[in-house]
Length: 274
Ligand code: SAH
Image (cartoon, rainbow, N blue to C red; front, top):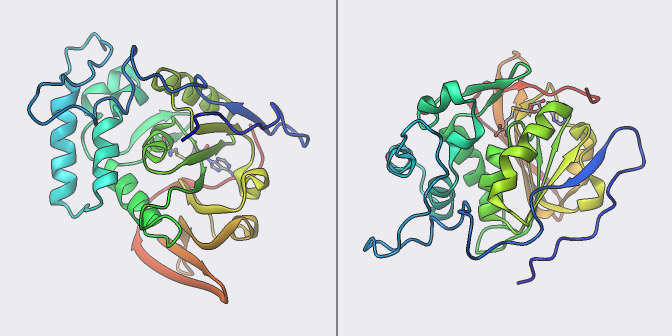
């Protein structure tokens, strides 16, 4: 497998939308701890887990995270790749220092500018639903677009389980924050974009999946246009009664199937950039 990044322009033509190839271009096999390195640690304990860079808070993040993953599994998360990804990605790196001790609770937390990092159980649920897309099930590792990078946590999780991730954020300050959070993880297959995700990201299309971390009243048509046959959309969307539900749409050769699942509470999908 090549770790070369696809060649994309440094900046898109229209407006403020631009591409920031996220973290360092090469996946390092040694050296700085990466999100992946923990997954490879042996059950015998012979291979030590990657030591998290000190948070200065004495948090034994690997053990606390393992308990979080155990609770998720007990709560019904089944997909081994999803559980492995949630074990590998250090959620405490993505939240403010004052919230670090809550990083492995199943709760959403503020990340600034009125936005939140999603609950781990919701991230797990949505990524599982995404991986059930025919193009991604059976080991297919396709391209995925995430709408709403926020602090970058879910993007890092996605980068563990699919081949390429494009993640777009409309708030510049959060886009920059995600870049800073993700840099040490050196995820060469994750590409951060600054722009309005309502229009998707046509240059990366077609996608095996689109996953949205912000919800509107309707699914933007561009998202559907950019999904391949056999691909899925997983997104919060308001129903007629105004209650937001998780919606899964799957593209078939002859059209779409649409399922409305449990109620959820996501920040609003907004147009434009700021
Ligand atoms: N996945 C994120 C969750 C962030 S909250 C995480 O793991 O932290 C949802 C994010 O969606 C917010 O940062 C918000 O600014 C962003 N958002 C809302 N509308 C958007 C749009 N049209 N395009 C891109 N991002 C959008």
